[in-house]
Image (cartoon, rainbow, N blue to C red):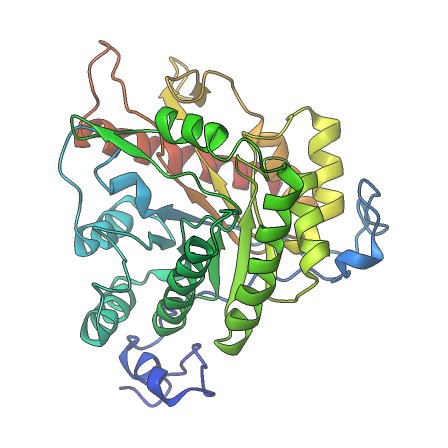
Length: 374
């Protein structure tokens, strides 16, 4: 280890995580810090829909947005081909030019049951060797079950994922409110069955009751996250918490510095006024962003979002990125391919299609970030 090596991963409150500072290659950050805005405003000091009083002023520092690869893209569930190993995901991210990787905390990638201490060290080591950050880990949890046994099992899973995030040097664990899951048909994942089942199950239990179960779980999970130096990032995602407004209500109800937001544009009415209101209201709470869809290079060489099987609507990512730059967002924009891949001939997409879409997605977002900085 060189004398000028300075580890950026400081988890000094738990000896069991000392290996991180010893295994990151010299000069490379394996776990990225949280995005920082020039002004941090407490959620309970702002009313929903009000604009940040500093929005549009020069009080924000220049944005330093990075683009990451969320490993759900290569989990093997949304295309008809094999999943990539964690080693291959890191290498893909390096070869394509991403800044970091957000691993999905489930099989076959980063399930805590499968990644022992040796594997965790190896992941940190390899990320460091490749010059990649590990800014976040992703959970797929449901805190809204009416069954206490299920909620307790979900809390235990999230606790283990928090521990894994700390071991990897990830500052953020992306979480859901009520993830319904996915089912498989002929080796191919779909959302249709679990979402219908979620709506049909327990029809006699009011939505408010399930909302309260979820909030209570987050209060407990946020305390656990704080013990390990991790921040939970709640993504607005159906069911129960689809909009940024609903996400904001959860944050205010839990009232913890260890629960913030992962903003997702597709569930949002993405007219410019609504995007601006969202960024002004919750921008100070955002620690992670995801983007998705499908892309195509046009005859003029420009890359555009195109309608797809999973996302028939075109979303205004360009305006969102400009708004994030305006408030000085200094975090990750992570790419995910999370819908059934159908090629131009109507056939199931393969790994080749995913690679092509991932390259286009990265180039597309790099262009938006560059334009936003002008």
